[in-house]
Amino acid sequence: MMNNSDATAHAASGAAVIVEDLTVVRGGATALDRLSLAVPRGHVIGLLGPSGSGKTTLMRAIVGVQLVKSGTIEVLGLPAGSRALRTRMGYVTQQASVYDDLSVRQNLAYFRRIIGAPASDIDRVVERTDLGSVAGRLVGSLSGGQRSRVSLAAALLGDPEVLVLDEPTVGLDPVLRVELWGLFRSLADDGATLLISSHVMDEAKRCDRLLLLRDGRLLADDTVRGLLRVTGTDDVEQAFLRLIERGEPDLRPTTETETETER
Amino acid sequence: MTLSRTFATTGRVLGQIRHDHRTVALLLVVPSLLIGLVAWIFVDTDVFTDIGPAMIALFPFIVMFLVTSISTLRERRSGTLERLLSMPMGKGDFILGYALAFGLLAVFQTAIAVSFAVWVCGLEIEGSIWLLFAVAVADALLGTALGLLASAFARSEFQVVQFMPLIVFPQILLGGIFIPRDQLPAALEAISEWLPLSFAIDALQAVAADSESAAWITAKILVIAAWIVGSIVLGSITLRRRTA
Image (cartoon, rainbow over all chains, first blue to last red; front, side, top):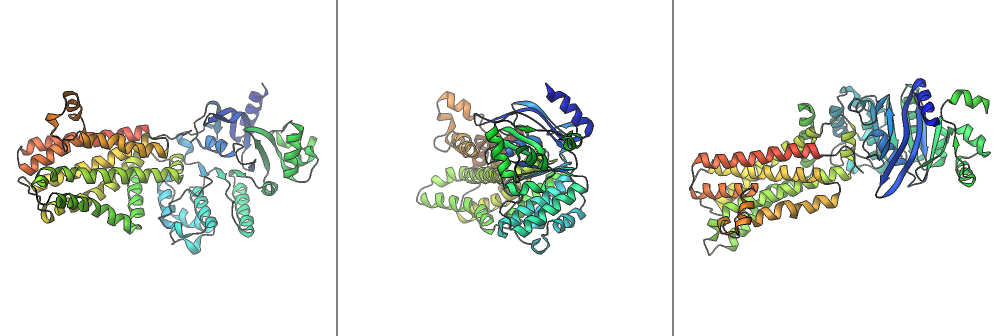
């Protein structure tokens, strides 16, 4: 199948994540159905799809906390979930996975010790996530948006090479949302790979590439521009609908630079 | 496994509890209140002399089992366990970190419960009060360790809660509180010989009556210690990094 040759191409071009033929069954239902995709290094990749499309399951599988039925996942050239990856990846779950009954700083201090990052990292991530004014407060007393930023800050500890962020901007006010996307961009500029899920199609435009997921299958794997061109629309929501209507996915996985200009 | 991660976890768990004054108060006082209640119920009889030592075994054991399994359950629900297991957190670090934190609480809780039983409720202890304390602490630690084991085994919140009646109740029923163990049907008596809570109750009753040597009681404590270590090891092994 072409999957294999694709995968080798990705490996050569240095894909950060390579998923091949991944099937995950959750609660008797197939959450991911023979999914193959690649996430190129140093880019911001948007993982979009309606709720229930399998975004979180895919992210958990990449992080290595999901039981997988079949298929393989490689992250930075290692099998997903490898011990060596645990300091090189940051993961933010959908709900803020931090301790409500500890202060922001106590939370970060604890996670820092688990990762083995330098103590100076705490100040760095507090600053990057703009939490300085609430750093001493109990997380349980913060707003939802602040809590999710604490969760993000924890994932930034130790400067991970791959960041997997499950709906990190949900419920944030627009100003903050723009700021966070700026942060994501600057992390990618520094060489990190970011896989960011969202069900807000608007946010797609800020990504280098998009993965559209529906019912555990890939509906599109393309750049934003490429997707809009293929579907003849100017908005991602429309493109999504077009692809569903057409019943034919838009898969142009990364040999991106060549094919992009051709088409 | 690394000690620094274990201790970081212990410190974090204690830090969380420190912020919750009511939990600290409940944890320290509830077993004593229950022992006081039992003493009061039997105030006009001499039953408390017989079952008082068993109560010291029972209440801290149950409270520690519940508190420990619920807090690891919280960790599961909040997503923090998943986050930790995606980090370089050893499963053993996690379990042992919790065991040390709650173990420390168990020591304080037991000290209060034993003091309360002896000096407020007038429980007569013929043997060494220190030995009584040692057995009681081992017993509370056993509750902690079994709570950790139960929650590590469980895949869901519902399962965790079910483990309480499954693991704790049979030990209480067969522990010799309702009827001396040697009067149980032979099969049940044989089972009760293996249950860790039976060792704790036997040892506490022996200290109270001063009916056995210190060596005999130490042997019982060692069996309980073996159960504690075994539960922690098994709990670490069975904790799942990947879940459905």
